[in-house]
Image (tube, rainbow, N blue to C red; front, side, top):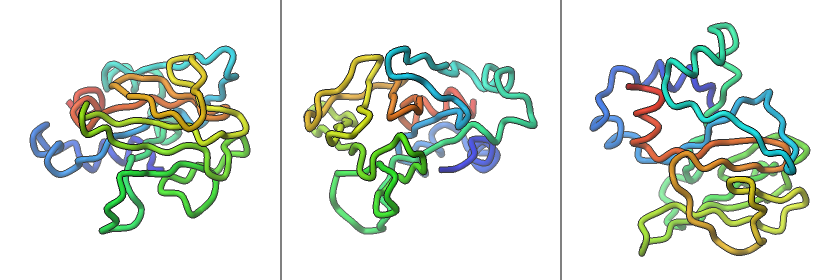
Length: 167
């Protein structure tokens, strides 16, 4: 997890092409203060950097967090990227509503798109307010809303991340 403001500051000098060549990972973005009940999964998708700045005044921008969807171990060839509370996951989210191994991200080579699969987590995983059936992979697209436990996140491809937060 990285405060979004740090990501913006680090990559702001890059053009979109430079960013997408250098930073090839997809992203999850959330407001760490935002908690959502799975029944009423409401979240904000930031359409522009200006909308983000309005929603989070400068002093609060570090509360918006970005999670790069990447393998933690360099050189590992698996397409599976795990997410959960346990430190052994690729993406670690320290929140009691997240299971130790909550879900994983995969890659559908036929569709050329990222997938998400709930691993029978205690509090479930929701994609655009629909509860996922455990152990079944679902295709993701830019702007999809994910609810994991009580946390709300938005999924971005590298290009859409750049367009929303860096252009």
